[in-house]
Picture 1 (cartoon, rainbow, N blue to C red):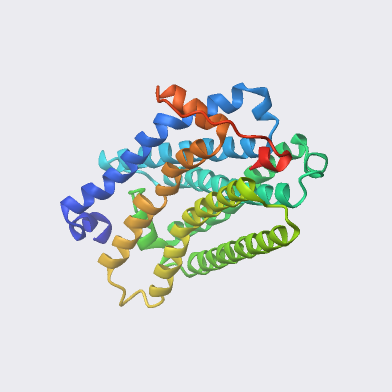
Picture 2 (picture 1 turned 90 degrees about the vertical axis):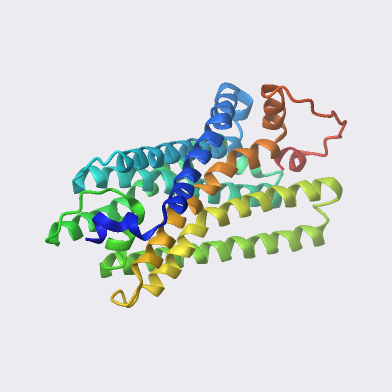
Length: 322
């Protein structure tokens, strides 16, 4: 009954706002992401830099993820009934693209740390060939982890007497994750690991800051740009992990699923899927496009905007990297 009447739990005006968020994000991404991808992939000098290859992977994954989200929303609005296998394929592709984007952001953070700590050995220790190997490893891990979760999802629905013909991620989070103990435990373990990664990256940033500050590596404008670049990486990483943190809170509140209010659980799931999952995808091309000089100049030229020109000296590899 809840699967067929869940729209009645949310007011129509609120539901339209939640459905509008992915559409606005898709328009924002479609306006700028293809331009950045073409720029990165068409220039040999940009393809020889790790940060641009990782950024291209992030933008590509985010673009496809939002497209899959829009496709799923259109299917649900059209009232198309889906069995568990087509729904599992749709969820699997979305999870792979999301995981690839998050892992690529993490790799960008580590790449920035490595470039700042060892600027003169960076190119020798981390050539472009290793970057392609890292991208392949990111996609392999992104395929393996969602495959395990989707397998448990199919197993759960093969044992339930009621067939669910809707492929709505918020609805599945309410009806599946909170009621199936193996998925519940696996999600809690996954989110706990992600919190550990966030704390580890934050501690690495603090160690990096104090070590380079005491050694005098970061000075003047170079220091400001390096810290700003790392802050953008960490902000993007936190926004990407934020939906899972909220999901962890929801799972902890769902320990006693019999007393959990379905309306509150549905509200949290809708906010996670339609706002928190989409927000970092929409912000990423603008954050990095305006941060990196090569991409920033392109965006100003593409949108016919005048950018004031400034003469700045080059102070070595660290300046170029940051």
